[in-house]
Length: 328
Ligand code: NAD
Ligand code: LMR
Image (cartoon, rainbow, N blue to C red):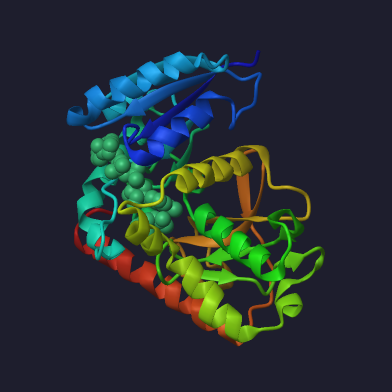
């Protein structure tokens, strides 16, 4: 057995937590030879519900689950963690725009950024799922000056997976035949799923599909509106698919993207592709040994340029808003 890994999950008694915890505990992230120590953060009123989830975790008798600790103090729960998955936030309800959530969630991510800065392990990686994910990650990052900025990322893997599924359906292929999908920008309605660099069985996906109108009028609205469509249908936001994407993103970050492929991850911009520096923007990235690199040298056509500019303008507005609120 390897050394145990300490994984913190916030909002652990929530919908996503109910799927995510069991997958991490069963070895989906670190495999069968690495014990996992789960450290679960909740707000005080949700701790009783969380105790019930812990009973269920125990009842699964997962050989890889080494220990579970729960609490409502970020400093205690984040102590020594190697991976922190920040899921806890107020989910968007029907009719609510994600920008409405900025203020409500700002306070949570300020406090959690400070706590991570103080007590997390030196090798910590922090993945933010709670919405508005990009800007929450920016707030946490800005409040953790001693943690390198590249250790923070926000989740756009669900959008990436949604785009893979839609493209596979359109091309009548398996998702396994598709590589190099890209989500640019914000995890919001302005995000840009880009298939101009994607490949289907090694051939350029946009050429295989040969239908710009499908890209503009079907793929992009379906993927960018999927979160809202699920809320409308289920009455609550996506949970199992969000947990699966949180696992996929952390898995690739820690263990590397497959040879010849890349993943979409929202990471701090270094100005690549004209995105203002310092924004947490979704890019195509390759990863290895827990580090990511933005894929360079992609040719950006006029349509993509407009789409990338629009979504990064929204990110810049969110940054201005939280700067105005004194959160960063
Ligand atoms: P949920 O309401 O079921 O659970 C959220 C949990 O967070 C609750 O149990 C709540 O008590 C807890 N929480 C609130 N404040 C907290 C704090 N300060 N510290 C610790 N825990 C706290 O919501 P959910 O469906 O699990 O979704 C969680 C978040 O993930 C939401 O913001 C949702 O919008 C977001 N989400 C993101 C994606 C994505 O792709 N990035 C996809 C789906 C959902
Ligand atoms: C999703 O993409 O399913 C979530 O981010 C929910 C939402 O608020 O859109």
